[in-house]
Every structure is written in structure tokens, then in C-alpha cells.
Amino acid sequence: EAGVAQSPRYKIIEKRQSVAFWCNPISGHATLYWYQQILGQGPKLLIQFQNNGVVDDSQLPKDRFSAERLKGVDSTLKIQPAKLEDSAVYLCASSLAMGFEQYFGPGTRLTVT
Amino acid sequence: AQTVTQSQPEMSVQEAETVTLSCTYDTSESDYYLFWYKQPPSRQMILVIRQEAYKQQNATENRFSVNFQKAAKSFSLKISDSQLGDAAMYFCAYRMDSSYKLIFGSGTRLLVRP
Image 1 (cartoon, helix red, strand yellow):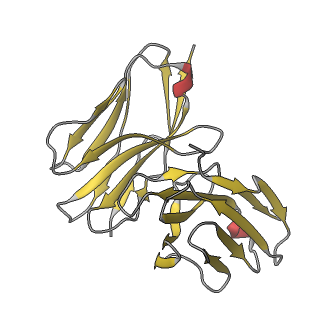
Image 2 (image 1 turned 45 degrees about the vertical axis):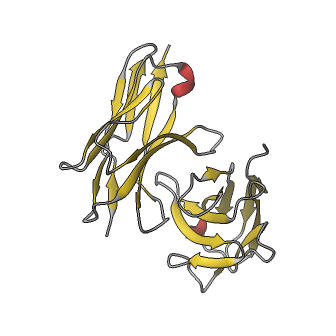
């Protein structure tokens, strides 16, 4: 069984630029999560999808971050414009349904200069 | 608000020895789940062990076991017969039964000396 795929693995951008991350969950997984992991901290949930609907986006900075999961499969997370404090690893995870075990992807390391 | 605290930024263990990683949490809920995740340098989080709060028996997975003290809100991870491959960041996490959001601690880096 293929795991959660994410791309790119690394991204370096200048502040005020935009960036997008892509996530492909495990086949058949209805729930998808995006986490932000700042260096030295544990992951923090940004947004959770159930199929193509948003379940929780309470910690998503909506003035600059957006995410979508149009067909209930792949998802993209966008930052526009980026700030220095957005430098972090962005982890995508998926689960069969809400409350089931979450499987994580390898993450995208973003550096904003 | 629920919080998870890992007070040991780094721990070191000799190969084949036993090490215990500490975790405390704060919640007013009675039904919840606790987890330990391993994050190697590849960054991929891997579930190590899970504990349901309603279960009194401590969870065990091969060399990994927990000491769950509900009244003290403590959830420590014991790794027996440590192996070089156990070297990684370990995160304690909490989830309410009524929510699906994982709340993570700040992590403990485990070093394994050959």
C-alpha cells in the first residue's frame, strides 16, 4: 500500500512570495489533515478535511493560507504572501475516517528568506 | 484548553538498555486518547503506541510500553532493549474522544549510543 505522498520535499522562497504544497493521501482515506511543524515544536493542525469538506480550520491563518481538496482526494495548501515565520515543515496526513489512525507523509520543508 | 508537556528536550541511552520518556497533559475531559509518535530524520511521523483513557491496562507494543497514570495525567513511554534505529524525535500527543484534532507536545530527542 502506497503511503501519503507530498511534494515538493524542500522549498526556499523570499518573503512576500507565494508557494503551494501538494498532498496525495492513501487511497480510500476520507480524512486529510495539514499540520505545520515549526523547528523545535510539535506539529500543529492547520486544517482538516472530510472528503472535500472542511471539518476544522480554526488554526489556519486565513488571511494568507488557503487549502482545498476539490475532488476529495488530492489537496493543496497555499501561502500568499509568505512571511519569515512561515518557515516550517508542512506535514500532510490521512486517515480512513475521522477517529482512525493518521498516517503521515514525509513533509515539505519551507524556508522563507 | 488541552496541553501536552514533554519536559525532556533530549535523552540518551546505551544500546540494549532501557529508557523512559516523560509526558504530562492537562485536560478536563474523561474520555480521550494518548499517543506516542516517532519522527526520524526523514520527518515521517510514525505511530508507536496508543492508549485509550478508559482502559486501565497499560498498552504494550513489542519493546515499547507505556505507564499511564490517569489521576496524575502522566503518560510515559518505556523503550526496552534500545536499538540504534530507535534514535529519533518522540512526540506525545492527545486527542479528545469528541474531537479528531491531535495536540502534540514539543518532543524529546532520543540518542542511542552504540
